Image 1 (cartoon, helix red, strand yellow):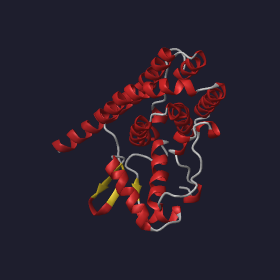
Image 2 (cartoon, rainbow, N blue to C red):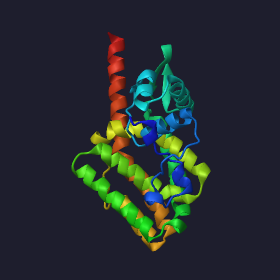
Image 3 (cartoon, rainbow, N blue to C red):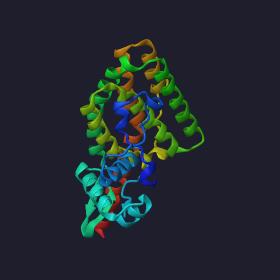
Amino acid sequence: MEELQLERDEAAAHEEPARAGGRPAPLLGGPSLADQVYRVLRRQLMRGELLPDQRLKIRDLARRLGTSETPVREAIFQLVRDGALELKPRHYVRVKRLSLPEYLEIRDVRLHLEPLAAERALPFMDRAAVATLAATHERLIEAERRGDFRAALDENFDFHFGLYWRSNLPVVISILESLWMQVGPLLNDLYPHARPVYADRHQHEVILEALERRDAYHLREAVRQDLFEGGKNLVRHLRELEEAEGATAGGSAKR
């Protein structure tokens, strides 16, 4: 967990997508402490830095962020309303674990919105921006090779939103960020056991080629295929886990 002064606001990239290759710029002041804490936690959720069922203690978060408990509490309640965290009895807060149906529903929404965001970003993707995405993808592949799945998730997020943030579609981006907040912890948990496997080429490479050719149709299709192919093992592994949990629960009930 970082100090608040080190927090980077993801939303800043919507206004200045060219800065640092589409990465968010530092906060310059203005947002309340609760807003800043919210953005720190939101970023960690989207990037898969937290785990499903992970307990979040307000006192610990306040200490690590260098603030009082009040803004942390406000931020956590907002994330509960967003569906990313769960408030349990006695104010026990934890990261929500998506079920398979919930994940599939989110994926269906992403299948509509992410190709749209990619297509709308195409006119703003100059050679430098495409080169930045290509470098991000190379870092992702290298992270997977060395088994650094945490870094791979970070690079995967930067690849996708380095494209989507240039779309100038603030409503769509807000929805996508909310969805990634819910999916990120699940990816953190399952990614080492369910790495993406592609039938032919990595779909990120196909996305990059479509960007270079200014080919909107194939760009949309590549984004869709990345969601389908990249998530196949994730869906299978999640289904196996739920079946195993169901069998365990059934066995316990018979005792």
